[in-house]
Image 1: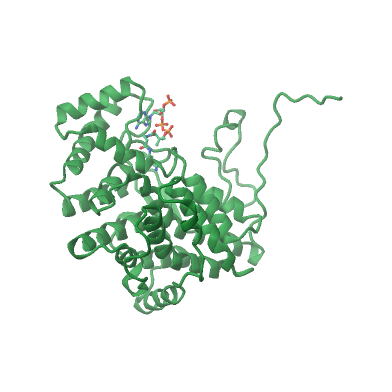
Image 2 (image 1 turned 60 degrees about the horizontal axis):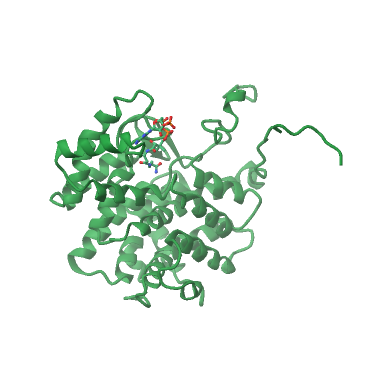
Length: 387
Ligand code: AMX
């Protein structure tokens, strides 16, 4: 690419559109193809669904799949870092059981770990935060749920998903199912290119050389919005509201929602123009772990019916299933019965991808880092005036 290549011509009609589609930088961790979905360092996401989440993290940071030795060393490195600094997360005892949204707890939890920042070593901070996330998440769930301290102490040798499930005190078949679902959830949600709001927000804050913790907390705050990460909470609530898996009834429900100008959750996407491969993968997992679950049966029928109904409206660019159609139902089957927590799982996964992108941006320009973000806003209706 030469300096002269015109990638995009900014027209007046592009202003005030949320910078939709306007190129602003480069991203080495992942790219999103409108048809084939997200690829991590070139690998289509569907090929990665069953790998260890730790290996997916290695891939995003190193842009290559780890060999056996690299995978072992990487996991040991994370395990060695896993002890949360003493007295951190005391904030969770202070907020009060059930108060505030879990995403606010996640953000505050991450900020409370900033006291252990390594100055000028964003890569070390990223590794530490990734290593601390399973315990942070477990303590968030226990404290906010009023369930006291961890059921079992942190045991990083179980892997990030297994350790979290164990700290919550899940056992037997339930623990196995929860870990299976969570492992793939984490891998599928880690990264989605550079321009989604939470990633962009995290990188923009990081560009001022703010700490990794402040940058990631900002990203989590962006993710917490109902138009972004909190959509996975809304999707499960929507599937519960459908309340049937009968095709005719589901179709009538979908048409009724559209007539009432309400969105059909779990369908459509700003960039993708086919079914999200992450939805396809999760449908397969659902068929494996909970084929007879009534909620999953509703999802199965919605996936058959809704694209046809939505497709009748030519304005809708993509009537097909997105990642959120199935993820909430799987988490519900994993034993996580409160949808308000679902976005924290999304946040946990994104901590990894966004951290990898922040490290890349700090290493840019021969280690100088990307310049501080400074897009231009054009003045509107403000003639110069004098008092
Ligand atoms: N239900 C109802 N209307 C929909 C729709 C859906 N599933 N998908 C698109 N539309 C509407 C849009 O609201 C828009 O209407 P408008 O012109 O009156 O504003 C029109 O169709 C054109 O939209 P688009 O260009 O196809 O998509 P978009 O980029 O504006 O919106 C999205 C994308 C995801 C917000 C939208 O598809 C939607 O609201 N889906 C339902 C909610 C959902 O599942 N969100 C999770 C998305 C996955 C994710 O990113 N986490």
